[in-house]
Length: 98
Length: 143
Image (tube, chains in turn brown, cyan):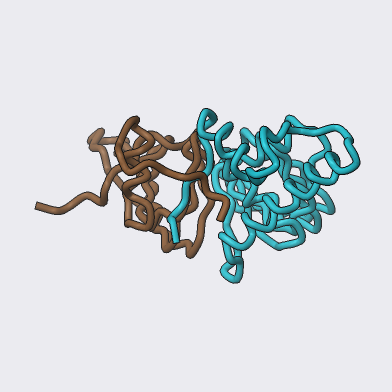
């Protein structure tokens, strides 16, 4: 198989992402988006292939009278997604509650 | 198949190669401007510029437009939905095989070699992976 031979040691930040291959991860993206899915592949640009993805888009609405901030989030599920790397802000293991 | 050595090299060393393998498939591309385009992939180049045909384009307000052809600049791509039936590893491998065939074809009969092979004992893959270790490349699950 082509995939370049990998060392087992963690030498640089991208190696940390390699450790998460085939695991579920959390990706924070630009424009108030978040993805949770299984990391199938990635490259040096942080282009990624994620499987069983849930995308969360968060918006803030300001109440005209009270100036209250109302946070809304919209979710959708996509079975297999190619993500362009320039939208990625951070990659982490899925957030644990509590 | 990209015609220039530069594009082939860029594609070979990034995930764009998977998108190139989607030629002929119907996919949805989500753009950074919150619009989506669903159509058949005509071509994807090394810079992720995508050419689609028979497109249903939905703008950010939800308005639908039908387009015969659509060219999307790579920088405008946010997501590409991969069709369910696509085998990712097989697609990547067959795309890489195409590149290596072109490379080897050119070197038969003493023609122009894209990469000089240091020794006949080493396969092309080995000298390329040595070179690729210096260039960050594809990493996927090892099987």
